[in-house]
Length: 271
Image 1 (cartoon, helix red, strand yellow):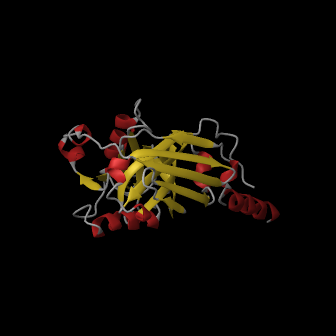
Image 2 (cartoon, rainbow, N blue to C red; image 1 turned 60 degrees about the vertical axis):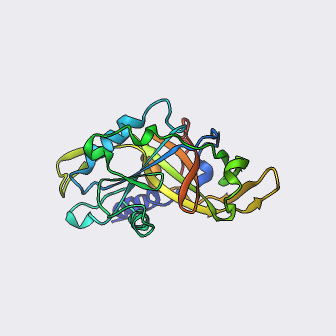
Image 3 (tube, one colour; image 1 turned 90 degrees about the vertical axis):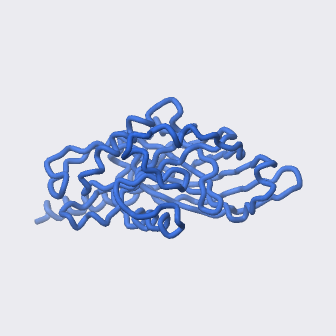
């Protein structure tokens, strides 16, 4: 009985959140041109989703990753009733997908669903993969982000010509911890008996408004300061972790930074 109790306690401890300060520090600066924020809504319980996830991993593991392209796989929960509960699924991600619908970014909710820079994209289904990425993107400004000791500091200096008719008070910064290199054995549901690989999985998401808006005549700027939420236990099993931060204005992605935390293994410890 004591052995069973000890195992239960250890299992409970492993499931507890991990403090953000145990991650390696992170610092990044964006280019001036607006990048592509690529959201994939997916589920381990959906038989159509593995090919879309495989395409996401293959298409964007390139030199422009975290510079021009920012892929994010949001695992939803509404297919859990089919017999398999997605281990990465979060209700908040299902709600985020419905928010796209309510804001008229999309026409319906389904999986796999791609949303690129707040616009529904169906090119993956038809094989028209390059059209949306060939569009000329505006020069919007530079985003800087620093994360250390469970604290985020960020600033955004917009291009004056772009910012002159923008209400920067509506801006929000979104921070995601992203994991890659996962493999999950699916035992039930539509994907039963399959080993599914997962990359660019959003493990946690935090959004915050600007703490200060400096709207000078020549150099308007935004500043963000925030203590981080606890890191989820799923990060313990991630072969690779990355921070991705992106700025939105009126729900539309504007600028982003991201990068792998190459030294995170061994540094993530429950406190």
